[in-house]
Structure formats: C-alpha cells, structure tokens
Length: 270
Image (cartoon, rainbow, N blue to C red):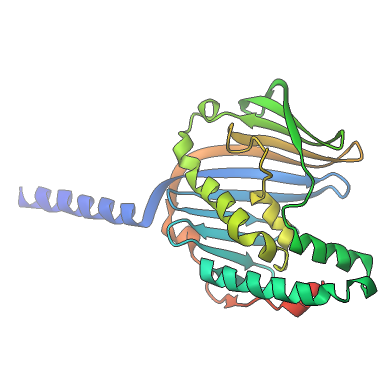
C-alpha cells in the first residue's frame, strides 16, 4: 500500500512538473514561395496564452518572440547569432531618436538618391502606404479547410488574394489566437518605424496588416497570394494548424547569441 502511494505521488509530481514546463498552445506551419525566384521559406508560429514565436527558415533565417504580458519584443538573427530586444520605453526612446535624425536628414533630402528619399518618407509616414480595399469573392476548399476568399485591390489593381478559414472551420477557439492580435496591435503602436531598422525587416510582413484586412477578424489566412502589375509575386500556404503543448523553452533566446542594439547610421546606409 505504501509502495502504491509513493508511485501515485511520483506520477502526480511529474505531471505537475510537466505542466510547469509546457502550455496548451497552437502550432501553425506554413510555406512561402517567391514566384520569381522559386525560393521557399518555411515558417512556424507557436502560440500560447501570452507568448508567440515566429521562426523562419531558408533565406530569411530569423525568429521573433513576443511576450504579451511583459510587452517585450525580441528579434533574432540566426545567421549572425544575434538578437535585438525591445520593451515599450526602449521603443519610445528609439522612435524619438529616429524621428529627430530623420528630420535632420530631411534638410539634405534633395541631395540624396531617390531610394534614400523614399526611405526617409516611409519612416516619417509609416501609415501612408498602399490603401487596400477588400471584397469577398467566393468560397473554396483550400488544403484541409473550407475558406472564404477575399480580393484586395489598390488603385483598381489586384494586389492580394486571401483564402481565410473561420475559427469555427478551424475547429480551434478564437481565444487561442488572442496573442497574435496583441502582437499586431503592439506592432502598429510601437514597432512600425523601428522595424525598418532591423537587419531583415521583411520578416515583419508576417505581423503587419492594414486596417481593412479581414485577417484575424474573420479567421486565419490559409493561402495568401500577392500581386504586382497583375502578376502573382508570392504565395504563402498554411500546411497545418494543430493544438499542442508548447514548452516554455521554445521562447528562450538560444545560448551563445549576442544582444545587439540598433545602429541608426548603418541602418540608413542599407
């Protein structure tokens, strides 16, 4: 009897320990293809109640980690084994420094190459990009899910197609994706200007949505196709969405990586 009690106690202890090391979460795996180069990037998005990680393999070998409780954002450059980490006060300070520097550079804008002038204008006005209007164009079966399809147009030209699976069709509670919404809001409020200074800022497109986008409002995009001048440029397709236990270690910065700070002068030179 005493032996049985010890066994039950041992199992209970192990179970509690495992709960401390892992959280119920969601894993989204997708592949993106650049249709001009046929270059493929695989992405994994790990979601728990309060944390999110996006990992990208291939050419853009980077990761992003967001802690919604502490509001700390981490960008990891796996190629260089470096990372950048920001909380709200740091981002506010960086934005102030950036705006001051841009205003100074604007005085000499007429003497700069056109691409640098455009870069300065984009940093001064991060919300002045393409305005996209969306309309529902039908339904289809995309991968394993029934989707509602949307077309995004700008200046009467198609720029985007989205095949979105509702949370109901996914069979996963909408609340499981709350941390994604938190990151999108955090990006809009704090990261838009600073994102352009990071070494591989194209990774930010994963979390940058315009105000009109049905993404996260209507569900999760299973397939996303971007267009330019009427031709498709890239495709991103979700391969699987699964509920799974995600260990706390998933959100740790890899051992041996060096913390870096943004060098504004070098960022402007890129």
